[in-house]
Length: 317
Image (cartoon, rainbow, N blue to C red):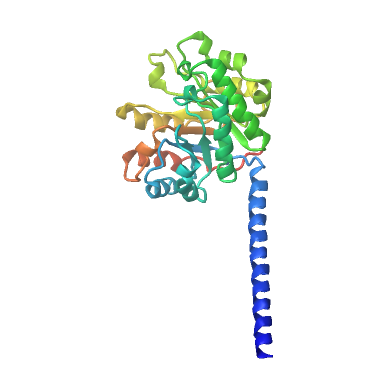
């Protein structure tokens, strides 16, 4: 009789363990489903966006300390390396996701010529599988009208593949154009008109501009950015507009440019042009180099600008 009782208890304990394991599996699936469902909702970034680009995530603890200690919340743009996969960014994204919004750059302009549409499709699907609920905006192309990206047809095909997959899942997309040009065929608005599909013009969430003033010098006058961004808004009527990349290779120019451009708002113009969907952006390319660690003097330069800047809020539209 005692043996029968023991056997019954063992069976009861085993059954309970099976039930507990099943409940744990169901709970895990529910969490995954909830996160996946949330990932299919485009959540706008708080604006103004004070963006910082990371072309490397080495030293993630120092990076996290630097970006989370800024006077205003910043958005981090991570450049995914050409030969890197999602696993190479696991620690960085796990660390940064609770601290700051993240933009993931899938195809830097220096990488695009090495990418085929088939490779882009696989790359996008792999990164979405890993981070669709952690990366807030997916940059599907960078400086895409630059003549150094390779054949235009291949660039356009890569952009279209990435947009179709990401936009199709309800996730936010960004596309960055290069403002300075050497050949009229690559002038930003001309290139957009000739190469960007109506679906992208209507469906893009962020239309951004890369601006390296040193690359365009000497120029007689810096563009009236309100006019430029107003025109960009007309081309992409449903997108927010702003700077997608800034920078300088000259150490003695950096502080001046950081102060100038991160202070720029859509009200800074000699015209009466209004750009309701200007969101800032900026995304200084040398973020890892210039703002990390916090002891870097340029960290203090940017932080000083942000101390006197508006607090980001969710956009009304």
